[in-house]
Image (cartoon, rainbow, N blue to C red; front, side, top):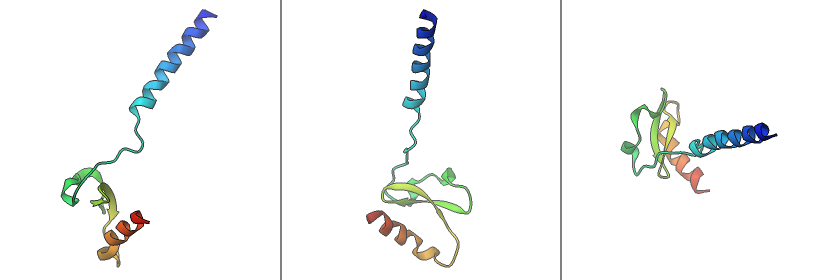
Length: 77
């Protein structure tokens, strides 16, 4: 019985490490596009500052010029 309780305690401690270390909602804060790291996104996406967070945005297509404005409007809703 003591070995089982010890195992349970060790598992609780071990699993709690992952809960503390893992931050799924982590984001990079920014004030403009130049604050976002260049290597954050894979091509053809680039890092843009949208509502003070760096976001990876697709940069080709017919609506490329208005894409950032649409993202900003979507976040306000």
